[in-house]
Image (cartoon, rainbow, N blue to C red):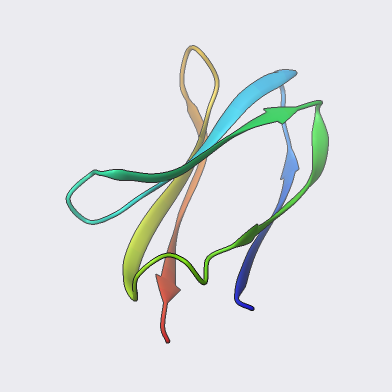
Length: 71
């Protein structure tokens, strides 16, 4: 099983984690509740490739990065 793990420390209590492919298509979304925590996502059902992840509040993107899924 392949996992992507995100450790977060937020300034807003409600945020959303999104993973998008190179075309901008949303492939994963999850609400993050609380100011800090850990999220582990099983990416084995996502096709091989480069993806971008971001954590949004209702006003802005507060964290972002890139992941590579290889099978």
